[in-house]
Length: 66
Image (tube, rainbow, N blue to C red; front, side):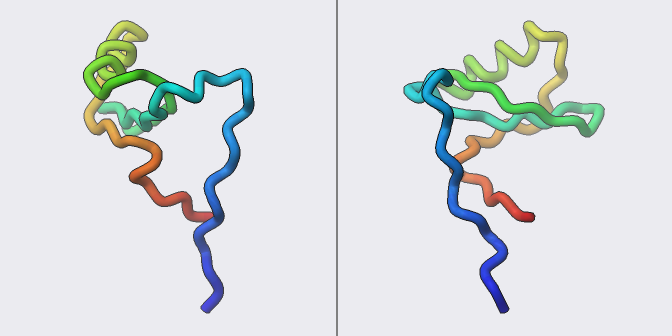
């Protein structure tokens, strides 16, 4: 069976690479990606944007499937 996982893509230079990317899953089953220094900061950013975070996952701990 061929490998279904793609190598991690490079982050464009204009994005803050020193911050961690977090995937935020909301109560309404939608999700979005944001960058923050800590998980607590990511949650605070999501709440300040009117979101209701249910799960927060560091992007580097996730697996991208196509």
